[in-house]
Image 1 (spheres, rainbow, N blue to C red):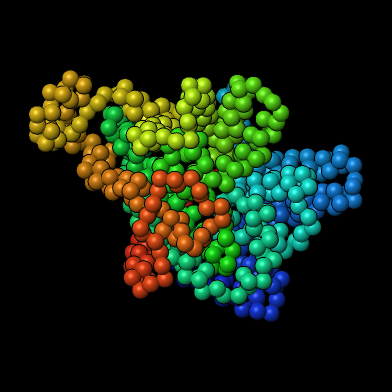
Image 2 (image 1 turned 45 degrees about the vertical axis):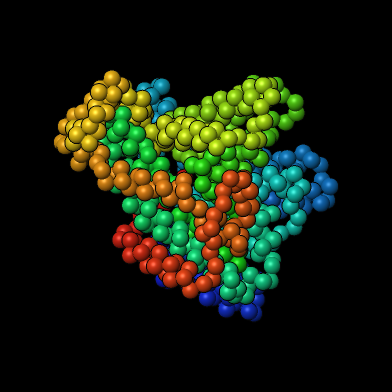
Length: 526
């Protein structure tokens, strides 16, 4: 079931909410249990076959975690706790490996030894990366002694809670489980409901109008490459730009809808997306993009690898390993591995640059507006260059798109623009930019003024308008609100007024009208 669907908005969400509060008047435990059942139904709407897999995973990890917690309390030998932890990790990673990486592994074995093995009947369960990583973090924290006794109902709700189950965020027990024990969430809160509805419909507008609106241009350009055709410089960059804008509003829209939908129940989810294209370097980009995944990789991969005093080169190696794992988390394929590797290289270069600036006595905590602008432009450009490997289905398509972005397939503008550029034509000629009749390719590549105008409109919203968390800043709809916006101010602040009510209602109506077909969120595949 999709958030951007009529069954979810008009049936599942209101029915679940009504019975949650109705049951909560008499029993908090039964209300929590109702939410667990509703969340499992939500998951099973896509494919009921995988409901037993989800429930089995929950029960297994609950028992392993409980065993570790009880052993810690009884001061059992640390080796016993370690055995339980390793058992849990092996089973969780094996489950994830089988469904997500088995075919990728076999494909590479087939290439190496000339066999033809395959497991084509494997269907990747939705959200398996999210609920597996959530439970891995839980087991590790239990081993570290950071978890006390907990009950099965709250643990099951922690894992299955529908706003995060399909596409994140990756939850942390200390943020979410205590909220389930708060009596106030079982009673309707008008402030939470008003803010939640607002955030939800802002997210719906982002998804159905903005993300889905620019998606056809990105799809057309990348499909053109997938067929083996070459793109010129501007075509390739327009394709990359359209896709990163689609991805931005798709991810941002989903995150808003998850936060808003959860807040209706009085439960705050962690912030998972915060204007990453405004980041002035790649480190800041990853603190703003898929924030809970970045936190997981930092706390459970990079930090354990980097314990103790280590040389700078070893720390940079650990950083690269972490990003390679982050790339593989997004998908089973060499494209994702290369994408993660590129970001590891980006982070390493940025780390070296910061060290050079420190050695020169520069204050890296402060910069001029020119420095921030250049840093932001370079960060986004680097991300667009890497996106070819993230978006395309095979290495050949990624290489073709990258060649286009590097100008190796030529730099050409539509001949229709020649007169518009007037006296600048000699300058363009000197730079090697030619004018060609692209009319025969416009329908194939989507390289036209409509795509460019739409991209400019999206760019304006991203860089010159506040994001949802800033607009709703007085009410803190999410946990861990980002504190790094030292240079950001906004006069567009939401208040429960008639003007805002009409504006949000209009946005909701437009967003609902644009639900013409079920359009999956891009992060569903992970």
